[in-house]
Length: 141
Ligand code: 5GP
Ligand code: ZN
Image 1 (tube, protein in one colour):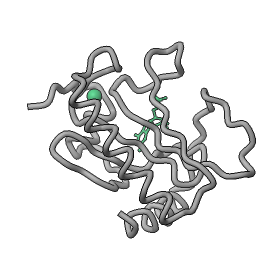
Image 2 (image 1 turned 180 degrees about the vertical axis):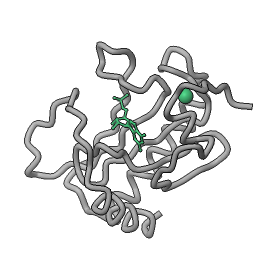
Image 3 (image 1 turned 135 degrees about the horizontal axis):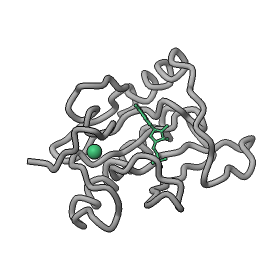
Image 4 (image 1 turned 30 degrees about the horizontal axis):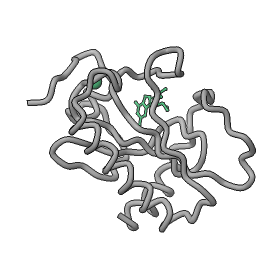
């Protein structure tokens, strides 16, 4: 069994209690679209277990989450053709972490997005647009 925390939003997504645009799932990881995308296609690769940060997660599970991030990055490249992709993983408030359940941001970059700040703000995305991009990415998985 994975460790879980009933108050955690990502544990609720893992348990299916909150909906998400799910891209991928295996025994230890899940990936879905970020609802406050900083760029089109912004997705999250998440451990199924509630491991708050890099300090808590077993190394083998971290490796599995990284493999899922790689899988999502491949789909983004194929579906969206970004000029680059950042994998970003925050640990602690000082690093801009807001959800204390380990995840990688898989972030497509465009030539136009300038020098994206590491601690970007969270602005609610347009759900119809997120869904349309999700469908393109899902078809490339
Ligand atoms: P952090 O700030 O911890 O690095 O990243 C947390 C991410 O989770 C943010 O980019 C935020 O937009 C995203 N997020 C927060 N709540 C939800 C939610 O309920 N559903 C989805 N899909 N993403 C969420
Ligand atoms: Zn959790």
